[in-house]
Length: 141
Image 1 (cartoon, rainbow, N blue to C red):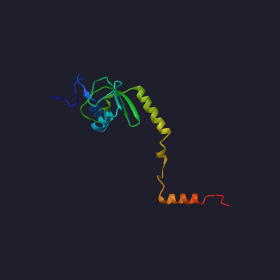
Image 2: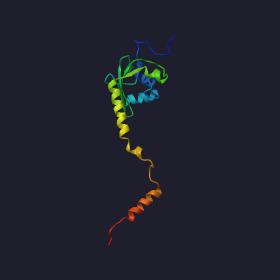
Image 3: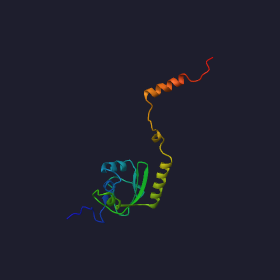
Image 4: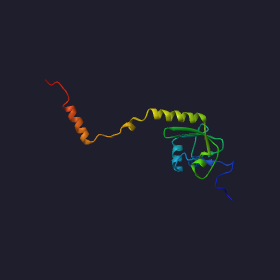
């Protein structure tokens, strides 16, 4: 009888399937797309979605602006709850520190576009600005 938890310790698991099961990406196709773009490396080498992962492999990936480096600690064919998924990997101390530094920098220096509370000026606002420019103090005399 086959176990739901996946392969035995000697067998490998596809990289895209592991990234999906470990909840790094919402779907396998998103995982495969990111791998195809070269945003995922296994043991310092470019990887393909079909690459077989084994316990102890080091995976470096990028999720948006966040870079992570993790050790593979477990293999699973199924996507379980978050605590179960987090047991499949262990993040390296250097990666944790870099992620915390990046989060602190984002907190201290937010994206300028996020500071715009009113958004784009309305047509009426633009007219008011144009009138202000037209009648600004100028010396025509």
